[in-house]
Length: 434
Image (tube, rainbow, N blue to C red; front, side, top):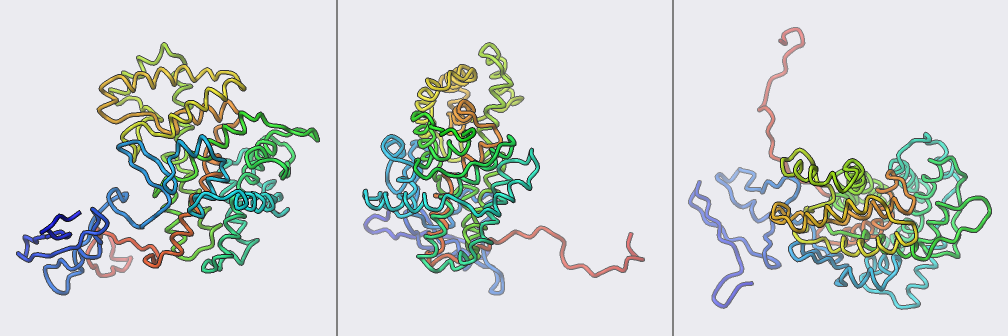
C-alpha cells in the first residue's frame, strides 16, 4: 500500500528507447497486464507482453471463493478455515457455502438437501451407456463421458445467462455425480446397478450404491460415512488449479456446465493432478516394509526415486488438509482394520519432517499422502481415486463457473503466444521439394 507522499504505481524505464511509463498498482501487488501493451519501440509494434509458462505468476480472475496462503498452510472456503468446516459441517453444507457464498440456515440447508436428493436419479439411457463400456474401462473415462452426455438430456443448460436455470443445472450435477461414480464401480465388478436410496445422506447413499448386495439394505458404518464426508469437504475446492482453470476457460465460451465440467474432469484425470494419491499407494507398495525405507530415502536424495505425496505447487508448509486426513485415518482403521501401508507412510513422514534435506525443499506431506490409504481401506480400487476427487470438486468447479459467468470483466479466454516458427516462406511445388 502506498504511504503518504508516494504513488501507488510502478515506474518502468525502457532502456531500448529511454522512455518511462507509469503503471497503476491494483489490489496491493497486482498490475493489469494490458498496461504493458503501451511499451513499444515503434508505434506500429504490438507492444510489450509478459511470458509466463504454466501461469506461475499470472492472475486471470478475481475470485471470492477460496483463499490459500501456501507459506502459512492456510486454506479457507469463503473465509471459513478448512479445519472448522471439516470438524463441524457436512459436505452438502460446505457445497452450499462454496456455491452461495454463505453458510446455509437450517431451512436453506434442508431445501438444498431435498433438491439434491430429488435429482440423484439419472435417465435410463445413461444406464445403457454404462453397459456399453468395456469391463475394464477406466472409471474416470466413463464418468467423463457420462457427464458430457448429460448435456444432451438438458438442452436448456445452454441458457447460461439465466440465473435460475444455472442453479437448476448446478443442483443436478452435484446430485448425479455420486450416482454416475457408483455405476462405474458396479460395472467393473459385473454387478447390477443400484439405484439411489434417497432416505440416506449424500455419502451414505453413495456407499449404499457401491456396496449393496441383493435386496438386503446396506447400512454403511457411521464412521466411514463421516470419514468420506470429511474427505469430500477437503477436496471441494482448491482455488485456480489446473482443472478449475479448465472449467473457467471452457465456460468462458458460454459452454453448458456439463460440457465444461467434463473438461475439468479430463484435466483432473492427468496423473500430475488427480492421480497423485494413486502414485503414493504404488510407491508405498513398492517400498514394501519399514526396513526398506532408508534405501528408498537415499534414492530420493540421489534423485533416483520420487517421494510421492510430499510437496505442493502452492503449499510451502504442512498442507492443512493432510493433518485432518491423518486424524481421520485413525478412525477409519478402527473400523476397517489397520492398513499395513500406514506404518511405511508414518515413517516416511517422520523422516521428511526431521531431516534438513526435506525441510529445506519444503517437502511436507500433502492431501494425497494419506487419502489413498484411507480409500483403499474403505474398499475403493485405485481407478476410483480420481472419481472420488471429482465428486466433491464438482461443487468447487461449478462455483467458479458461476463466478466467471457473472463477472463482467471476463471474456472468452484467449491467451497470447510468443511465436517461434519460421518467417514467411513461398510455397514450393512437390516436384521441386528436397
